[in-house]
Image (cartoon, rainbow, N blue to C red; front, side):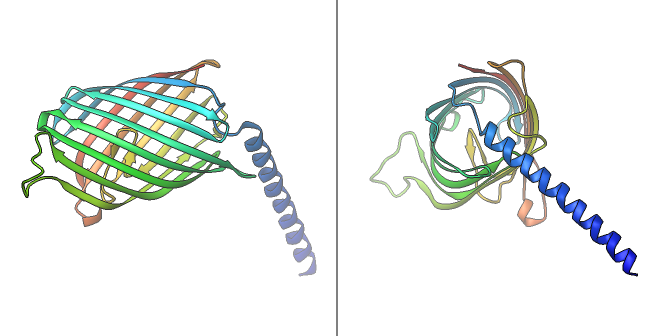
Length: 248
């Protein structure tokens, strides 16, 4: 009995040492690589999307990131859709590095001109996030206002306001962020060009590959079901997006 206990104790010590060594290497790698390389980048993507409301459509996406300094960056993005919808968004992001990963705060403004329906759709959101090499998590709040183009402020029928909605996002990566390729899976109620109600889940699978120090190619697939929280989930929309990023 004593011999078995000694063997088990040695195995536990060995296993614990391996775990500690792995964590030490992970922390060292994270501190060495950080998140992003504080360079300007510009992304252009082509997108095919289908949903039950607007049917098939093609979209062109343009996204940019401007690092003001190592602790603050600004993102801006635009999308034109053949469904006759134009979207603009901007995000301000202060970042606070930790021993492992970093905390960030996103303040986002998103405007969608739904020209086909002659409607303005504007949202403002703020969220607190934490990310490290294998995980990114956000949680916050967003408000939304929808009004017709030719609004009559004197009438009773003016606009629709949703003052409080929950914002959330969790994304898991298969490799550290500093690697030249990666694959991720994400569950959220928002992305770069939409902010949905909390019960409207968005599932995203993405991959990217760095060709060299300046060029990156990306491919993303997205699915949005409806009725998830009512136990009657059914397909609503799907999107495939592909493009490239140039860093300079």
